[in-house]
Length: 171
Image (cartoon, rainbow, N blue to C red; front, side, top):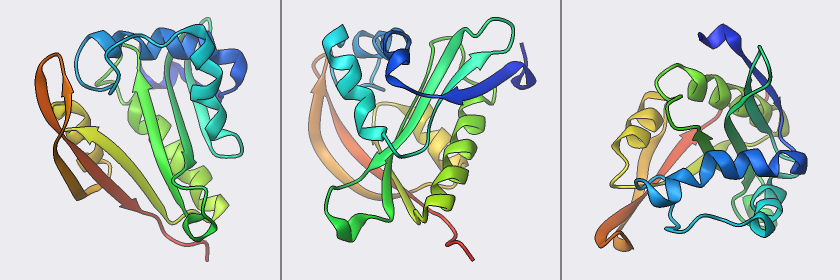
């Protein structure tokens, strides 16, 4: 399957079960998710809800709609002085990384962000997640802050990296 076989669809609350199917393996395997326990069905809607009104998408195969990833922007802060800043969440189903799907999704989200007048996208990443760090660097994010040793998962302490991507203003 190639990138041309992937379709981006709007993300909605009806996708909650598939979002959990994609997200939950990362809770018990690796450091992409900060929680170490799978989220329950009751948490799914609250996981998606903050993205309402912001760009959000589900990556699906074109041959049947199998969900292979989800991405969303959400407000960085509810304070109006941060209205032009959004926070990124993007996860691909295990086994679907390295195919250009994350880049396709991020480009889609960035396009929507620019149209909204967002000028900055932030992302927080575990220092023990080198694949995500490389993806963000390759995608134009730069490290803008680091909280040292603030997290611990599976008895491994880690830093939280804050990465920033500056977007062009609407001309």
